[in-house]
Image (tube, rainbow, N blue to C red; front, side, top):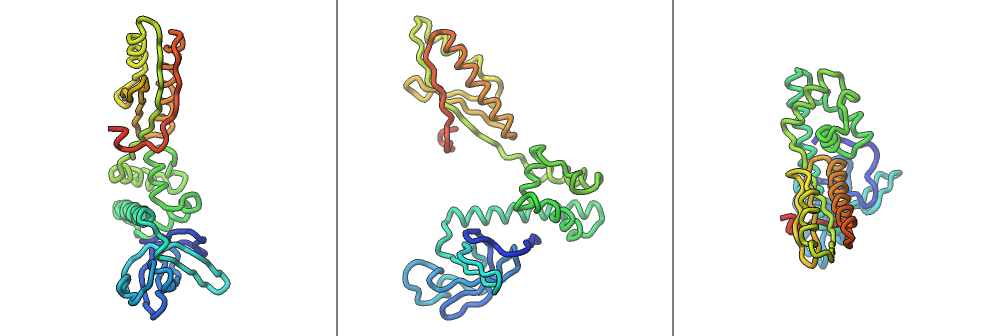
Length: 264
């Protein structure tokens, strides 16, 4: 991975490292993104008593660590292996994979432009990393229309790079939901509710399911967060307006922490 950051990581940061040296009571590692050495004491390798450090790591092993302390004057960086959760480890590994993919995209563009890969990478990273933590995050914004590459590189490079990005990165699907609880005491209440829900569905990316007890879930999918948010608001507002006109009772609540099971 080409990305190199200036300075030092901050305490609590997660960093990808390669084990370079194993001592009796500590491990020394190279921190990839900063190209600096860090140290893990034996107590920060794993919980409990450790008889042999090599039961946990060997030279050359790539590990995710948490930054505990940084002494910039002396250049010391204290790390922990045991304080990294499995979820954090997966997240950091995924970030690195995505960043590696972003570098591959730049490499493909450099080949087409017949310019040195590292030269093009540095030109892009120099500007992008002032605003983003990773280059791939900027590429995601290119996909979503939030970043114009012409503000970073010349027109020819920007057009080719954007084409390569769109060829290699598929937009992430955004899924959000809201629940409406409806009660209509009119003799035609069922029809009123049914018509309100049918009219509110504005396209194939909107789905409404019955959750029981007079509660309905509105699920909206899309690739642009602002558009998806607006669609959910429009759908819920339409339902609320129809039910209120029918003198019914309606309550709306945005669904937080939407699970995959709740969408299917």
